[in-house]
Image (spheres, rainbow, N blue to C red):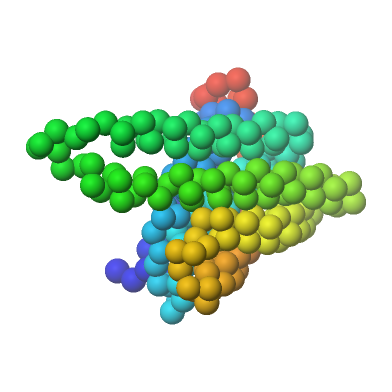
Length: 233
């Protein structure tokens, strides 16, 4: 199975899951999505792949879904709620880094088979997480404020695509540049570093364009969602 085909499966699995979380758990579901999405994306991003003949990191689809989740929260529930979601994601990554660093500090038993693999994966996580945290906070805050600014002029339901795409297009440049430099500078040749930055940014834009319909789906079901618990009627 090709990487490109897997990426298509991952895209639909990710955004359908986001909608399911919102449909059954309302605003809380989106908040949880931001938290778990941020943690998983920071693990996925340690892996680089070849897709469409270029080098890219994993995690782009999940990061794009986090932007969409905060855009939905911002659009339906307001900027304050979106900012809370941003900080929830931030704290989730901090907790993961702290607890996994402690876990790696244990002396493994002679029969242990996990330490080396965990060290390979999570040994990179603190630097990657630092880059992600800085890029995430700055990028998400820029996204929230730009989204709110655009909404002043394009506030109808039909113009959600302008708000979502406009805010993500700008904030993703900042997010991607900061993350690439902090996480990978010195570990890879500069040419590969720039390729990762460029492809990551382009993939985020492409994913944003493709995921906006899921934002409209979320807005269309908002009236049927119970924000105090599972939306089971």
